Image 1 (tube, rainbow, N blue to C red):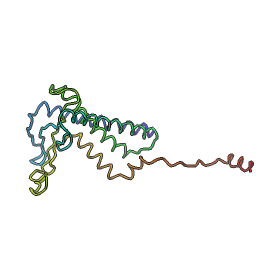
Image 2: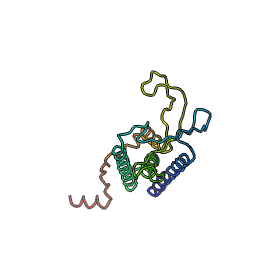
Image 3: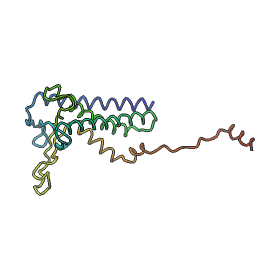
Image 4: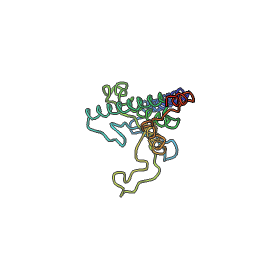
Length: 208
């Protein structure tokens, strides 16, 4: 029963967050100009349309080859996570919290993979696997002092992110907060000696 519950929970989380992520990205991509800002809550929470060529904070690994390798690494990591997740559910070695954590990470990773894989084709600007990730949430909580390396003079939080990024971030934070519960699943199962029934004990005594 738990296997079915956890499986349904995982599928629901992944599908819901991928749907929300893609709906918002497509809306931003088709209704906002590149670099345009729309205020959501005063001046501290905005939609700001940019496209990310690489990883978080705009980090990239070269032009075409680097982008292709990044996409392939993402797919490989997500593929392993899904395989690991399925195996743990089959063996009944996972709980609800771990299910939610892994589901959020997988949903977030898949959301950004969809951008990289298909947006170039769908929006007619790049071939398969060379699309750009759409980012839009810009939070301006307070100004970072100029003396802070790299981020000085920018607002906190300096990165512009999307729903998929948020899923991965929340999942990783959850992994750290519940690390004992989460990393327990990576340990080898202890072999437990089965208890003998009364008949087995009686038969063993006869043999002695």
